[in-house]
Image (tube, rainbow, N blue to C red; front, side, top):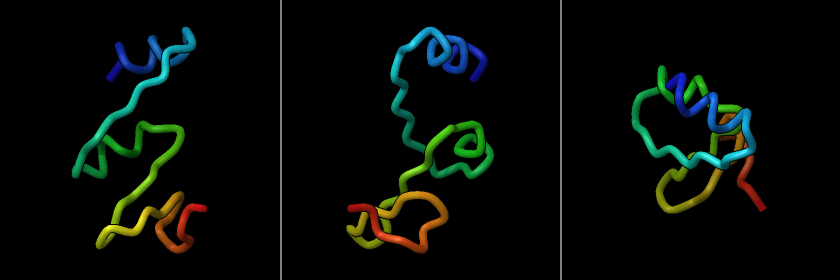
Length: 48
């Protein structure tokens, strides 16, 4: 995770896909896909 953080600080976009909430907690932005619907943030609001 430290390598990903360092790369991101240097301006590299990192796309990570995980089912582990502990890993996802490291992200600046979380997008969820639930039953084929894309949600951003806490999962309450569909992304536009």
